[in-house]
Length: 246
Length: 246
Image 1 (cartoon, helix red, strand yellow):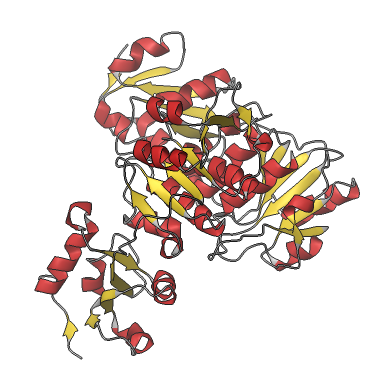
Image 2 (cartoon, one colour):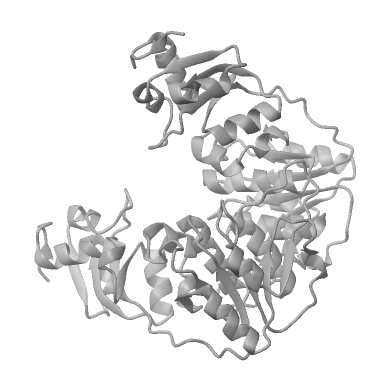
């Protein structure tokens, strides 16, 4: 197999663009062996697999393998130390879920890719049905988000859409919508009734949940904190509530 | 007040060194107005307060204020957009806690500053007594750790020490030591008895808790995950368990 040694190779130039959100419409890049094997196990479709010669043997069975130099590989990742493999993965075409039942996480304008990715990972581990993210939330195919998701996004559908409409749809099907609030008048999360169907909204790190969405929620919920500092990271708060509900 | 305009000013050069762990023995740097006010409210001791002229009025009451240019301020922080203030804060001299009782979090070789900081924040919000971190854990005065702690470290003592010795001390005083484990034979965390005193160990992101510490623990605990991916971020897992225990 010929090895691509030039950073100005057309395929490399085209692929490199996928590091920017504006150029991602049907595919995205993952890096590292761990994420690659997760993708493979989940049945993801690879458009291209770029490897350095050290890893060539490990991807022998694949069709779309492109051998590249270490320097060329570096241009395809934001990581200072790529682990020998970058793959272009086709975005899944996920149909919207059955609205009549399920356990959903709704993320309103989450800013930090790490927080967004960590919440997707938690939702997948908890066996939720799907994650809805607002249009202004961080990008799910950002390298930092992908790192935080640890491959969990291969196992849970994620939809970027208008959360107010999602709430309306869910409520029409009698799926209760809960929202986190710092207000002490909100219900203690431990007193939420156990239910097979629910949607839970988590809000922006600084601003919380937008006013319109809060008004839309069926119930406001809070986490009582006995400590001197009453503040939790949003992904930690989501984990505490989700695992108390399942 | 004279304004420091040179990056080679002696005080600036000396202060800048505090960005590196090896130069921090008695003080560290915090940046941004939010963290500064948290520090002030918590009664932290400021050795120096560096501000740009825009913020000078807001720190009028303090003695150790140094006026600097935006360019000089930038050399004192790793943030690409410092918010006009960097302060040198004296490290607290915290005496070891009373071993006979309390609720402790033990962090074994936590690698990621964000995870470390987030767990300190969770421990503070939960009102735990103290956090012990192993010698190889990430630095608590790293700018990323400080950002994740959100000032919570002003309210909970943190000790860097040998965790095996901590366990021995706690166990001598009948404080049970729990450890997280991925083994399904471990106790479901929801079945842990409610107790006023406990210590909980969380392990390294990749390797988990070291073998010797695991053996030392009184009980192994795990979080059942009904999803297809059975993996949680360490700080989320810590949050779920800590809040189930308090």
